[in-house]
Image (cartoon, rainbow, N blue to C red; front, side, top):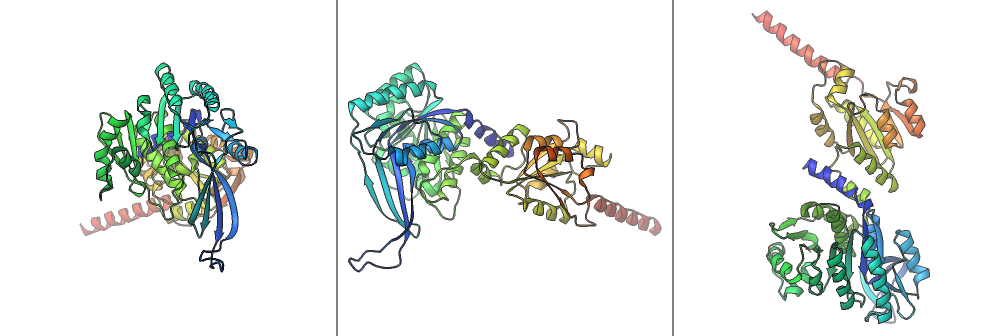
Length: 502
C-alpha cells in the first residue's frame, strides 16, 4: 500500500506537464449568500439579508479550472457572449490561468448564468439566464477551427456537454475525423453519452441517475451492486473503454474492458456541498489516466480530489497540495527526494509554512513526542529527515541503530505531528542534512537546545536559504542513549543476581 501511494504522488506530479483541451458549454455560476430570520409582510416568503455575492466558473469552464488547478495547461474551446466577458468572465479565466484564445466570443449570444440564492448554507432557489439554443453555423465554424488547432497540441480532450447547444453533431463528426488521424485520450461527461459512441471514448463518467436514463432502468435499493451490473451494458451502448459510474456518498464503480469491475468507496466528509464535484472527479481521473495511471489509481486520485472540493462552499476547485494533504495519513515516507521537493513546491504555492527537523529517531520516547509536536507547531507542515542505518552507525557507533530504518520510519508515520519523512545519509555520503535543507528550502529549521548556531554543520546553509532556526528544549533524561543504558544496567543486575543465586 505504501509503495502504491508513493506512486500516486509521483504520478500526480506529472500533471504539470500535460496539455488538455476542454470542449463544452460555458456557464457562469453566480452565488448570492445571505441570512434569513423573518417572513416578508408582503407575501409568505422568507426575507434574505444579502451578505455577499460571487461569480465562479461553471460547466465546461469549471472543468477547465479544475484541470488548471491540478497543474495542467488548459485550452478551453467554448462560446461566450460579449455581454459580461470583460466584467466577469475574463478576470476569472485569467485567475485560473486558462487560455482565452480558443474561445469564440459571440455578440449575439447571452452567456449562460446560473444564479443561486443561498441562506444558512442551503440553496433556496436557482435562476438560469442566457442562450441555450444551438449555436449558429458561423460560431460553429469558428469553434471547429480553434478546436482542431487545440486538439493537435493536446495530450487529450475532455468533453463537458451540458446540452446547451455547443457540442453539435457536426463538431462530434469533426472530432471523429481528428481521432482517426491523430488518436488521443478522450473523456466525456454528458447526459447523452450515446451520441459520442463513434468517438470510442477512453473514459465516460455518468452518475447513477444518468446511467439509469441511458439504459431506461429503475432505481434499485443496493445502488453499488446495481451499478456494477450495469457497467457492461453501458460500455456496449457507448463504446467506451472505461466507465466511471459515480454514486456520490457511495463512491464510484469503474469498468474497464477485460477486467473485473472496481468499486472505490467515497471519502467521508462532514459538510458536503456537491456543486461541481463531478467536474472535479472527471478532471482528476482524466489527468491521472493520461499520466499513466491504472483505473484503481485514477479512481483514488479522483475520489480524493472530489472529497476536497465538496468540503468547500459553492463551485470550487482543488490543487495537488490539497489532495496530498488528504492522502498524507497514508503517504508520509517519501522514497524520492525529487518527489518531496515537488511536494514542497506545491505546499508553498498553497501558502503553507514548511518546517524541517532531522534525527536518528532510533528508540522513540516521550521526549520525541513533545519535540515533534512542538516542531509541528512552528508551521503548517513538518518534514522529518531521518538518518539511514549506515549514517546512524557512523554517528552513534557500531551497536546502533537498535531499530532498522524501515521500522523507525514506520513508527514516525504514526505520529500525527509528522507530515512527511525522508531518509538521508547515503545519497550524499553525508550525515549532515545541509543538502536536504538546500533542496527543500524550508521556512523553519528546528533543532534541539543542545545545539548552538556555531555548532551546527548546517548553519551556513540555513542562513543561505533565509530559513529561521528555532532551538527547542529537550525533555531531560529521556534520550535513546539513556534508555539503552538503563536496559543494559538492568540486564547486568539480573545477570549478577543469577550468579549470586548459583
